[in-house]
Image (cartoon, rainbow, N blue to C red; front, side):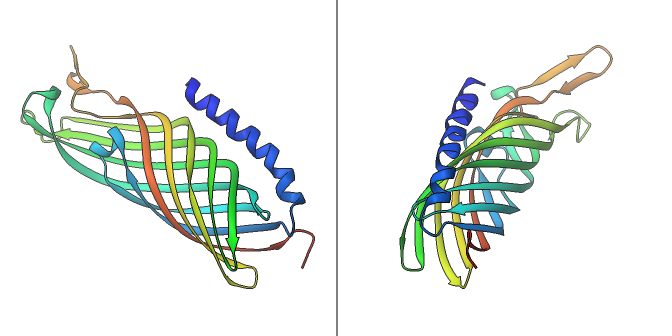
Length: 229
């Protein structure tokens, strides 16, 4: 995937460039924290799956205006059932899809501050690993004639978004993040991937689908200035 490799290299170079800048800025801080997330699938994936939730852990080096962040996220999208026309024009069938995804990403951030409040933007790149389940019902006598499970799909992932920080105490910061994620392809059952085997009869195969989703995250960070108390 040339698009993901190019973006990954760009974000990686920016992170390497900004890390020394963050470390040399006035009162750079090392922060670590955890948070809770709500995510909603978009684009093609949004036709088959809805909202999800998850947890995150993050480490940030925050300078006066620039910084670097490392995010690890786990998201679970519960099974969602959607009615779709079989083979695009046939009878309506029901596709049930569930997804779990783990992402790890690093990248630069830039922000401006006003008192205890700061706002900024960030971009990051890394990896995403998927575990998906999907099935189709509504054809023939078998109520669940097609089911697939996909485990271990590992792809590149790129992220971009906005971050809002509020200092709520000594070395304690509350963070709100709005992030959009695009990953490489992972396999899902869809209504157009019917196959027929001499021995197995009708069956479905996972269709490679690029995943994208929007995430809102609320977290708490704890830390102190580097080299300070």
